[in-house]
Image (cartoon, rainbow, N blue to C red; front, side, top):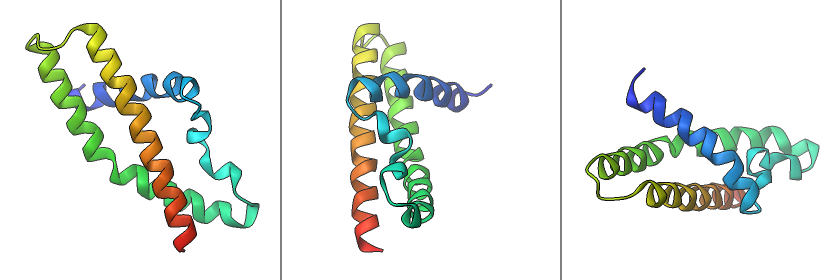
Length: 104
């Protein structure tokens, strides 16, 4: 298993509780809040937005892992940074979805 697979799995597992704690629980299914006739378009846009964010997430994970291995951050700092990044990333993606839904 390569480091990207490991990080992706960890990121996914960390995302769910953080989203619930941050009030962004609906980020997992953001298209549910749109009318039925707009949900297919929303789902397509949501997949595009998530695909676009993969490189940013991977880079964050690799940079953070390196700093952790070098002893530059503690386990607590690592978790706090993950929490902050995940929340900000979810908020950013939700904002992008709203903007794109208005445009199209």
